[in-house]
Image 1: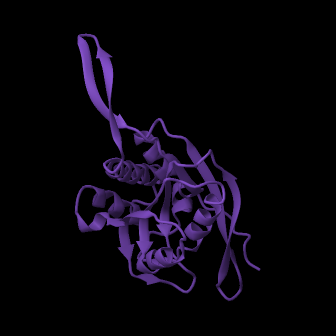
Image 2: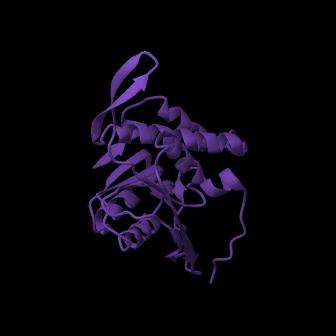
Length: 220
């Protein structure tokens, strides 16, 4: 199932606007905070789909009954660009464990690339709800590679993918290529993908905008 936030206008769109805005992008602190807010609002919406159970809590004046989430999701992100969005989700699901995955593109001179998953730090995911967040979904290749590697480690009860900006091409690729069921939450869907696999209008390099420019050493 696909949940497109842009089809139900809310304050969420303000944060999408600001992460795209070249006049605002120079402030990395503001960029990171907006990515956090996107993660927070997505986490809140996702929480509505979870199973709940009643628990009693003792107050200074008596006992109250509250419905709380049964499952604590495992929050997974792709380094490094996904860290701010991940923090937003962790602000909401503050009792959750975290998983971190490093995936990168290895470019060839033809502008084509292969995706490699280089590093994984993942708790037990068997029978758990797995939420995977990443700011951008350009081709979908990295996300497919990450999911493929994760499900080798265990069998989650449910997989939820959260993306700030995606292309329709990448969404279609995910639906065709991921071998397990998943839900997709996306903040905005763009229509164009360049030959170098950059989203247009997109927002640029989310990792660089959040944490500073990096040196690339991935050309063959």
